[in-house]
Image (cartoon, rainbow, N blue to C red; front, side):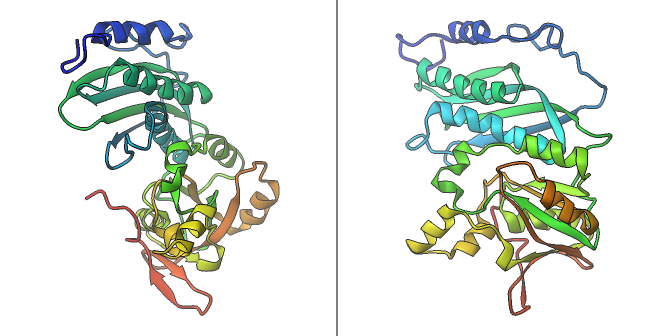
Length: 314
């Protein structure tokens, strides 16, 4: 029994049996799944894209406002967003959950169902993991494996001066709910990689400014974002109307939008916009130029650095 559980709650072994009984894996792809010491995966090719993400109570979610299902879904979606940023399609997941003692079996089941729903939507089954408890807050770590859609994965380091800079969706105010219900842009990523070969790409997890700065730093160029072109979300406008930071500041600095920020050679930009087949908004927001860092260019031509305008983990 997990320490701290009430007697009416199922024990660890029973919970693991419950998870294993719900697991439906294709034996040709996953000969061994939950129940052994490790999973066995038949990868379709030798090259794998591997990413790991951790979400923690009090930082990435609060149990007063998020259900166990929402937390589980987010834990998986965050990892899948990283695969999208690399131009990869999902293969499978493993997860580790460290839970606060006393949360009980219903929380574990809700958490798993949330993971299960996200995994099923993107055909990326959960093939194994670990479950434990302690006196601290809830911490969940998910590792995702994927395969590159094209000949090579897309990195942050390929942008060059003259490239156009795009973002998907709208930005800012994710704390109003998007941080729990966002959709990883896997379909959009695969389409872009297959047809337009982005030179660099990242998912916006720490904010447009910080993540544009990552591309600038890794690519050795300057990312210049036009203030008038930033797609500001309705939530950011609503929060600005209620007081505090202006909507544009939120769109640049708020984290956890999990949209794609990518660069393309300018010659491809117009065609990409014309052919875009998704309901997801696509915005041409700027350009890569000679120099360094990420800047916001205002209508009067003045520029301000924004590569520190976002969430910093340390």
